[in-house]
Length: 351
Ligand SMILES: [Zn+2]
Image (cartoon, rainbow, N blue to C red; front, side):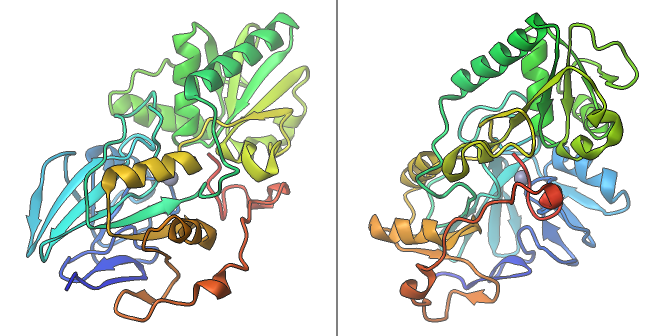
């Protein structure tokens, strides 16, 4: 019998002494990466050194057990290994081997390479617990180099028109990739306060990001501004003249094409896998059982249609209980963050 898996305060695996990405305070928990919806305050955490660095900015007094990537460690009867998820600096997947069963929990993951962290890896496993943020066929991202080219093309066009190019991305992760891309193409960059703080932490972790001024405290002549979505609501930003903005997020592809949080345009530079990449990822892991979360039930249904044994996790789930009727959940459909920016930074990460 495989170990019992349950989903309430994060993922719990029978025999493993800590939950994975617990959503409420736990004595000891594994934190897959530092985005706020995965990194809650706990008594003690297990994480990579980079995630611990970012996590301690919010919770400075939480003791951390640091585990490097690719180094299996025993926890009681379980062997645990962290390996890169490519999602952002420090982000890791976890392989738990217990009761002769290999279980992978992905956290958030990105298949395309990321300019600020090691590339995603895969591990063969028996049970795969995976995110499915873009688990709908309408989410198909162009090749990432094409997205990079289009971002740089946008910046050049706006500068040629003597306007101010503004890239909008989530303050932790996405913005650092945007800054890195811009500096690789020789552009000077200025940012808002949340991104500046994150840039400093990335530099402290060894990521070679250029130093950046605050966009309100420097000449914007021939510079590119990178801000987080929250800054778009601020009066100082709104009053900035001659700006042309580009929202960088996977949400700008898919069923709600043009979802831009009020920016002039959007491009799908994402920190996640698109639908096809989710499927190829599964093929590489070759699991006999798949649990999905962080997305909609529809992805698990699509997997079942493709012949996989897949189930969407809802709170209160236990693997020893009878599988819920698929028919009932087929009513669900993709729900996206509303264009109304009241959801920004609250219920959704904007990638
Ligand atoms: Zn994340």
